[in-house]
Amino acid sequence: MEQALKDFLWQFHGECSEHAYRFMGCHRLELDGEVKYVFRVWAPRASGVSVVGDFNFWNELDLPMQKISGGVWEAVSVHARPDSAYKFCVRTPDGRTLYKTDPYGRRCEKLPGTSSMIEPEDSFIWHDAMYRARRKKLGSLNRPVNIYEVHAGSWKRHDDGGYYSFSELADTLVPYVKEMGYTHIELMPIMEYPYEPSWGYQITCYYAPTHRYGTPEDLRIFVDRCHAENIGVILDWVPAHFPKDAYGLYEFDGTCCYELSDPMMNEHPDWTTRIYDYGKPEVKSFLISNAVYWIEQFHVDGIRVDAVASMLYLDYNRQNYKPNRFGGRENLEAIEFLKRLNEAAFRANSAVMMIAEESTTFPFITRPAYDGGLGFLFKWNMGWMNDMLKYMKLDPVYRSGSHNTLTFSMTYAFSENFILPLSHDEVVHGKLSLIGRMPGSYEDKFCNLRTFFAYQMAHPGKKMNFMGNEFAQFIEWNYKQGLDWLLLDYDLHRKMQQFVKTLNHFYLNHRQLWENDSDWNGFQWLSCDDANTSVVAFRRMDRRGRELVVVCNFCPVLRDSYQLGLARAGYYVPVLNSDSKEFGGYGYEPVTVQAQKGEHRGFKFHGSFRVPPMSVTYYEHRRNESET
Image (cartoon, rainbow, N blue to C red; front, top):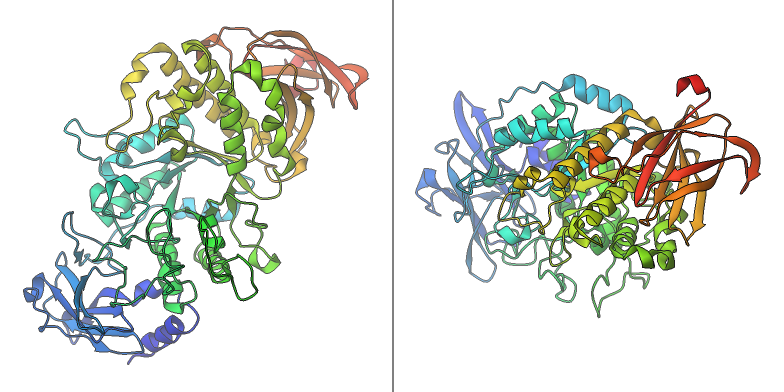
């Protein structure tokens, strides 16, 4: 046995292999001038395994596998060819025969077929070397991050209902995102999955891009095109659980192989899916190598880890659970797994964005593992999202009674590196669309939503918005159809899209909104406790001290002479107003404010602001009147 394989098996069964994908699954070999394919699979309790496929007429006796370690089986075929379909025929300890998809398979046949397919050797030529070098140099923490979340199957569809392929999305989605001023595209899971209503969150083939949108090369074309336009690509990824489809990971060798064996703990009570056993080195190798695979082989810029809270707690949505060895509720194996995952991802690409979807108060999600944290770069700010959606849904007359809901996020805004998400989960299952949640008349709804978007953009933290929100789609998101692009024939929807585009580009061009996102050096309240008027105001500063003043009015009442304390002498010039007529507003235009000497609420200067109803206005500080 060659030394590289020996070293891999030692890591695979010992601690963890970060590159298991280079050895496991199906790989092309050239031996003695002949092309062959080697197959390897982990099935520790199987009594026998063979490879069956197109190339041997699905004959389980033709290509038996041999054990080369405590749980890894291997076989070599001289007949296998690219595009051949295959499975592993697993004989269980109790005498059953199971036909399993390759856990490391890089391509799957179209449903309803469930076989793996031998992928041709990767010959794709990347063109993103300069982009990747620049990203490694600059990083993401102090750079603009404004993410457009996309479900690839329902952004747009062909007239016959067919999906856009990844290469077609490269021709359509990428220019749209570039024009709109987003910095990243986040794709809901694109790994192979069988159940359409799961939206990709119940994965059966972790290493295979789903057949729905084309080939692995099509996905590489898409990512390469994004990078050519300086757009990053983030993938949703699901290491918390997997479905119980018979051909998948479920009881792979006839026993609990990838999943926990304890029947009390091995299933999610809500999702009826199996939970990974993070204590097994082979399971850690499978998952961590998968993340590294997408980073290395597809050049993705980030991985958003789904359902982290469900991984961290043994009692997640459970009435009964088994505590850890210290008697606590934390899943110690999962915590160590997440630390290893993030360390491996940053070794693969030091600029990668590892993002946790985590909804509890578990500490130090974005602190490095060596400093007691989990090692993620960002965490979704679910608290901000829930509070703001609750607040914006209120009729403005009642918002004064819930003012703390608006301002509470700033008590913890810098405890983690946050992303402010308005995700797909918030526009489905009867929750209504964002525009549908807004109170008031048809026109009022648009005023509220513009105010919401402008406040999100000014609030500390990176940004994320789900597709369709940018033009105020009224119906909830439906994965079965494309977005309602026909709404752009209507004036207010078209102007909403124009507003979001303007807001996005304003964000890109103003370092005050993203350079100091994770500490108090970039933020200061000017007014946070005026519940009676539902007005808040604050400063955003970049590292050179340049500032924007942001005045937010969450009540549809004009405040003609609103007094605010100011930190500096000079002029405050309105540079973006959500109530402008060009965006569908009523056109109450704010005016330039000159700071006056005189203490006001702890500041040395003050000014009188004209605050349009239901609006957010950004003011740029300038020292000299001539600059206005």
